Image 1 (cartoon, protein in one colour):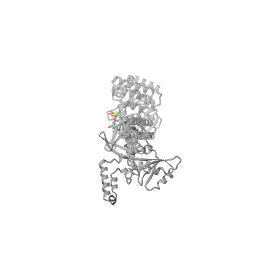
Image 2 (spheres, chains in turn purple, red):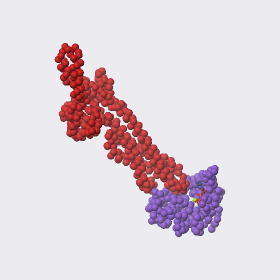
Image 3 (cartoon, chains in turn green, blue):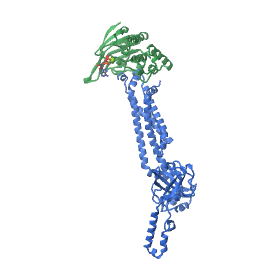
Image 4 (spheres, helix red, strand yellow):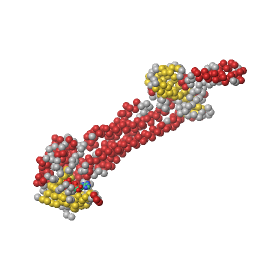
Amino acid sequence: MMMSDFAIETDGLTKVYGAGNTEVVAMREVSVGVRRGEIAALLGPSGAGKSTLLTAVGLINPPTSGRISIGGNLVMDGPRPQTNLTAFRLRHLGFVFQKSNLIPFLTALENVLVALELNNVGRRSGRKRAMELLDYLGVAERANNHPSMLSGGQQQRVAVARALANNPSVILADEPTAALDSHRGRQVMDLFRKVAHEQGAAVIVVTHDHRALDVFDTIYEMEDGVVRLSESR
Amino acid sequence: MNLAYKDIRHHFGRFTLTAIGIGLLLMIVMGMGGIYRGLVEEATLLVDAIGADFWVVQNGTRGPFAEVSRVPSNLVHRVAAVPGVSNAREFVFHTIQREHRGKPMRMAVLGLSWPVDKGAWLPLLTGRPLAEGHFEMIADKTLGLSLNESIRLGQETYTVVGITNGMVGSGGDGLAFFTLSDAQAIQFDLPGETVRLERSARQARLVGMDWGATQPNLVDRAASQSSEIPSLGPPQISAVIASIAPGTDLRSVTSILSGWEDVSVHSRQDQIDLLLQGMVDKARRQLGLFSALLTIISAIIMALILYTLTLDKIHDIALLKLIGAPNKVILGLILQQGLVLGSLGYGLAYLIGQKLFPLFPRRVVLTDDDLVRLAFIVLGISVLASLLGIWKALRVTPNEALSG
Ligand SMILES: Nc1ncnc2c1ncn2[C@@H]1O[C@H](COP(=O)(O)OP(=O)(O)OP(=O)(O)O)[C@@H](O)[C@H]1O
Ligand SMILES: [Mg+2]
């Protein structure tokens, strides 16, 4: 197999949940590639398997079979990890998930800071970077509030800030704008595009928001576990 | 950033309540250990306080505390005459239960060898040692008597001239110190009617005998006081206590005494062993066992508490793992909280105990050794209990952050 310049590459990914009567094939032979500096959208009806694909690529939901390479390194071969996934996630991946995913006992600022500190960023520079990110996402004034004191949209923006904290080479976002108004939603999408184009990150965004599709370089559609390339610019 | 601290601060109320719960639990464990120590200490307190080198008691008995012992009071002179004995004293000890201010009052009566022993060795809180040969007493404060109070025991009224602190018998009853003869009077207190009946019984026996008929004088004598009748012995004492001269071998002295067939000899250590292995043995074992059980149970309860604390954090832990927190961060979070809870609980137990234990009817003794040992046990429990939570946390997959 040739070394590719894909930042994310999957090869025949299949995920089967359950067994026997309750067996669900959420993902069938999915082979996709996203390049460095590319931002891709993943569309599809509910239950299509979008979250399954995203979590598999995010190395938190091992596929039943197939392979995942990130940055040219084979990291998953079937359900078997090929590297220390925790350390790998910390350094290379940034996540924003469908549901709120902030740590409830930390403030907004600390939620961003914790990702930086885990990556051994110093206290002062970490604090500075975290504040910059929160400021950029318009939640700086809520920096010292706990997640329970933030609106759904504000929580989502803090989660985006945390995903971007360590300048990851891969960003995976599952409906990051669902809880935002269209203006803020647009802003977040633009930010992802900027991170992709300026920092060379590979970004996959699951979205239902058809008004914002113009920010994407590539659009994939997923149905019944099967992924199809629908548009490429 | 210390995650354990952040979590505690955010759930402060709940964490405090948990710490209080653990504190109360540990206080009971601490108290139980203290009650055990107190029992042992109280059991041997008197023997230690009296400080005699050996005890001479009725032959074959384990007296005078573990069982009743009666020896003639002149035994004290025989013991004093043994080479190597520096001093010998009479010892009278018995327990009575009387009413005082409408409540039952148990009192361990101890006779002092007046006038040699005025009770100057007693730890007096207030008042003074005995100054008169009769009708004075020194009472322990646990008896609830006050200085200069008069109480009636038997035919006589006694005045409290001193109050001691912490002088209790092996059963936990407060001690009261009298002169020897007063202590005997209280023990052998007989109502006038009994004395009169006994006198007429004596006369009747005599009249029916040969010498009653031949020596009518004797019949008159039989009606007089017991102490004036040579054939009736003086009231008996419980034991003779003695000390040996410095430089004398205790065994050489006791070997002489063990040749006497009317008495048994116990060294001070024997006496302590008799009390611990005989009298308070069952209570001691019971408390010891209960204490051990309580420690085990509190370990289990703490483990369950820390485990449920971890269960409540499963989602957060999954999230931390998702972000990329290594296992040692998660492990640190749980272990630190376990240690904080354990130490807070221990501190609280100690503080509450300091206030509460002195109010207990019997002594609760917290020795430094026991406290240090319990501290290590709590430390061990905290670590072990955390392990259960850690075991669970390490099995959490980051995927669980997405569900729920
Ligand atoms: N843990 C699981 N166990 C069993 N089945 C699952 C599990 N997670 C997802 N599924 C099933 O897999 C299929 C794909 O689910 P997935 O969450 O990937 O869909 P989705 O495209 O993200 O949907 P949505 O747009 O509603 O978020 C669904 O049929 C779902 O019921
Ligand atoms: Mg989904």
